[in-house]
Image 1 (cartoon, helix red, strand yellow):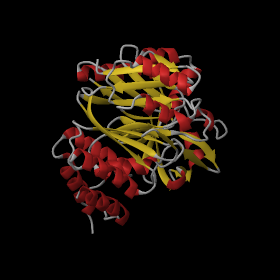
Image 2 (cartoon, helix red, strand yellow):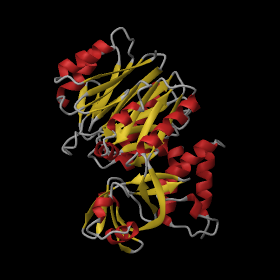
Image 3 (tube, helix red, strand yellow):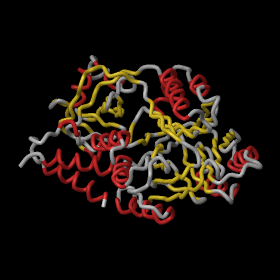
Amino acid sequence: MNIKTAFSTKETVDESVEDICRQFDLFDSELVLFFASTKYAPESVSKKMQDAFPMAQVLGCSTAGEITSGKMLENSMVAMAFNGQAVKDAKIEIIENLRDESSVRKALASFESYFNESMSDMDPGKYVGIILVDGLCGAEESLMETIGDLTNVTFIGGSAGDDLRFSSTYLYAHGKGHSNVAVLALLKPGVDFTFIKTQSFRDLGKTLEVTKVDEERRAVLEFNNRPAAAAYAEAVGVSLDEAPKRFMHNPVGLVIDDEPFVRSPQQIKDDGMLFYCGVKEGMELSVLEGTDIIGDTREAIEQARKELGGISGIVNFNCILRTLELRQNNLTQAYGELFAGFPTVGFSTYGEQYIGHINQTATMLVFR
Amino acid sequence: MAGKIKQMIDSIIDQRAKDNPMLERVIKTKLILKGINPGKYTLQSDDDPVVLGKLEKMIRELK
């Protein structure tokens, strides 16, 4: 076994780190990825995890719920350890100024120097990136855009959570806790890998063209040259007052090759709409309708298993809005059980990253 | 002037995807997420300076 997982629901940082450490006993951990509820003091959890695995590179973030093999958890800590056969090499970088392109370039230049290969030449079949980013920064789109311009290597990940307090989220690397940063890890896996991007929506065949935006605020002011909120309400067939109740079930999405890149409405503001994700003028967004998260996720995992010929580990970045829907429908146990057969860690995110920044989606890194 | 956007999009896809269909799809997706839908541009499309600026930046990043 080259990838191991552990979880702990103990109350304190010390107890939980010790619990996880014990579960990884005798395993030759070279990289440790962990996700932890904010009940664990963010100031100390990173240091204690790094101290517990002094020979490993350790990274992680705070969450809005955790996932491990067979379980969806709350108020816990989950971890995945990789040995040198699963991940031959890795380098972690912190981007401190999220809106400054030069900070992103600096991080990628560090990867180039470490791996002695240009990011633009790196084979996306041999390298993979993990991105963990402050879930309240609102800067994921530009960050992913800059990374995507500089390399063909896929960066997949999630925006950190804070147990739905929406106060501060935390990123963990090099034994320290940070806010308002992104942590990037560039991995050279020793095993094959693939990606899952799954969202459970069907296209209702109604299009809303974005005709006026305030990109900085993630606000759509007009759809189809009309006030955005009114145009959305009409498209989903409800009154303006009722429209917010439909946001979770009827988000909108940029549909590319039949694959929606979901943009979830957050609230109506004046006559416009604020989103959890950026939208650009001229985009044609499709009105979506929620379907079956459990069935679709099961199918996506099965496809990945067939593609790889087996799964030795899954890192699951699962949108908090999906988690809330699962909680509402008493389906968290069923969702957790989808991962019972595979070493899995993950968390409920405030946004997901894969090619770009998306909502109401699960993005997963899957190892053979 | 017309058609420059289409030419630049084709050039970016050629340079970056290197005939790999999977990478071609990813690069097209990146462009669409930037608000540039490759399917909407032909050799007759007007040279919108805002779109040209975004594409020029992408090309610069490749070097």
